[in-house]
Image (cartoon, chains in turn green, orange):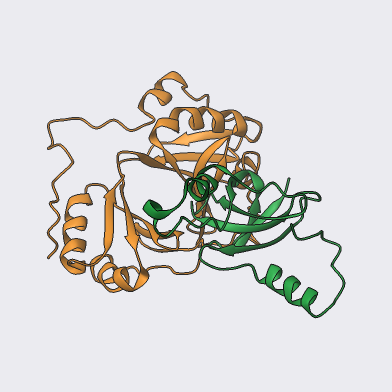
Length: 112
Length: 210
């Protein structure tokens, strides 16, 4: 049983109050009429299934009923960060910046 | 004044109202608790429940003028005064509970104050009801059925959370040090009534008519 931090309620609640809702940060093609079948098919049907860090949408179903994002490790199930919709992961940004500076990868896992 | 049509949803006096626990109480007549009751369960039926949605900037002033309550903006908190309460449910959603029969007048007054702003007011009085638990073991009974931490250190007076309760959902609130309130769905009322009777049996549970 996990405790998950809801960025809207601003506190940790038990996992049973939440539901997973799939991959986060999917962008709908800006102009669907001009999108190729491949682009549109990718958007509709194809999802990442990484071994390691994964950004997902979750919903606080029994609480405030808001969607938010989670950065989660699919191997260790460690939750590195939860952040509101419309924002980007600060942990992932920091890891990317750290890699560019030549720092070693942290133990949490490889970026997919 | 807003352009939304509002109508009186309550039937006039001729129709008798039955609380969601009407049949539960008949089917489960309570044997009086042996010795002193550890838990006292009381229903507060027919209250006015209104869901307010919108940004705090839109709602704050109008809600204060109409109800005299300040919109709580801290997550999981509630403001109450006498028999009125206003609870935070989500960043853009609040639950307003008022004495019975004030749905129509309150909604009209609120729409008059808030005008054509972007907000929603929904009367959910028929869909949910309030169950009040008090007594020395009230917290123990609730603790058996929820994963939410109810210790006074993390659950002070004036806190209210929407959470899982007895395999269903409920809002658990603590208006003051003596009382706990459950806001539950009408359709789950009988189930939760029997669940709580069973959960409270070991402490001695009794019901109170109000």
